[in-house]
Image (cartoon, rainbow, N blue to C red; front, side, top):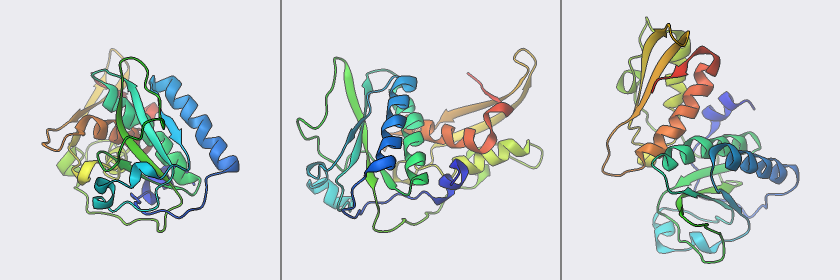
Length: 231
């Protein structure tokens, strides 16, 4: 399965079997987490066979069942922490999908169990991601149109339009999709096409994290050789 195929196949899954994550699948995830922590300056921790975090009332309200494995998405406090968590965390999510696993981004439907993770000075937990073999593959949800989240049209480049389509399949908090991508055209100084990505406003929050996830999807759909992000 390619990453583009994983984007299409991935759906949020909240109920899991008791099949453990082992062997080459576990090794591939652990290597990816090391890479993500290095490149994203994060402190992601992979917790295995620990069910207590998803036995709290909030988890039951969120319809989580059978969660025994999860990622603690943490890092040093910074203005861009949530965006980095989204961008790099979704790399793990998509890899997991290619390995036959299922996942779900979790904002509040979990409890922090002492002793299951380590936080260094000035670090915080941004969210959890449940991971394992799902009881089902999940279901798709209604998404916005390209016109709702971008200036994509018949005259914008095909790669840009494909990037927007991939971004629309990105998981966001309560499916809010509060992001926008704008094609800015060719920039002579950088000799590159420019794209602006920006978050919207939401009472629910998590828009910076959502933007990071959507930017990764856009890059996969559009191809990073075709453009640069505008500041």
